[in-house]
Amino acid sequence: MSSRRGVDALQDGPARIFFSNRLAAIGFAIIVMFASMVVVHPLLLNTLWSGQESVYDPLIGNDAPIVAATVVERVTDPGTEISLVAARTADITANVGDVVEVRIQPAPPSGIHWLGTDVFGRDVFSMLLAGAWPTFVVGLTAAIVSAAVAVVVSIASATFKGSTDRVLSRVSDVLLLLPAPLAMIILAGGAGGDFLTPLTFGITYGALAGASTAAIVLRSHALAIVERPFIDAARVSGAHGWYLARKHLLPHMVPLAAVTMVSAVVGAVVAHGFASWLAYSDDLTNWGAMMFVAIGFSALQGTFAWNVLIAGAGAISLFCAGFYLVSLGLKDVAYRGGETQQATRRPGWARRLEMSS
Image (cartoon, rainbow, N blue to C red; front, side, top):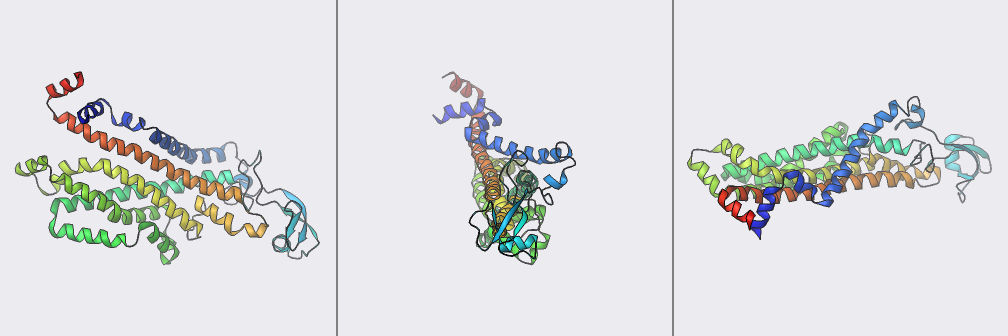
């Protein structure tokens, strides 16, 4: 049975293996959708929304409708009443019983604002599109850095062993005591929060995650590879050190490193969104900040901004789900790709015999 799978894997390329997993294909479509949002937002601002920055700008836009409302101590009808606290944010002289003109914030979805507006009258759809860029910066930066760090650490441990392996293993064990998502939230909430732009957030997260969890996973894989016969043959022929690592070990690490990259994206995006939700980030155009505004400022308007909270939380969840589903396809590629390598090592007459049987 295993030989039959190896023959099937030999006939399929990585792309075909990946897209044969329907969940992975769905995840890929989700990622493409979010990637298109990065392009669509500036395109809309320069075409359909051109000259309407006061309406659709994700930071300073304001297009809340104005209505007359009665000032009350406790709001029972949000359509015709406004709390005293909220009324005095618009008119400091307002008192209970007065009729004041107020802006409906947040406003429900409409033809102009597809997802409504937030508590400051900003278009939620525009905010959602604008949040795609910093999310991709955080996620992809964390993925690349974590994979690079994990591969270097694991290959160094497996190649040189001895004191090198012991030191790197102890570093990974120590970093496990403070997981990367929690470390980033603590760092963002402290003195280090000033320099944590989306780029530096992703780099820092990637370094921490790559040197801890990812390094431990890849190290075990690397140690298993160096015990294989072809590594012994390479050593006998004179290969050693970084040459052995670069030419013989690295190619076998890439598939598993790709899977760890996807995991890093999910962790980094969730950590960044949570840090923004706690107001630990100066980056205001991200989905975590949308959730912070929805929860933190809704009390001022006397109504909760469910449309903003659902948009921000839903975007983060769907974005992470897309990368998780992609990881399932990458695992298939890594597994069946290994079978392909095993199949190609067999003599040609053996492969032809299996394919004809």
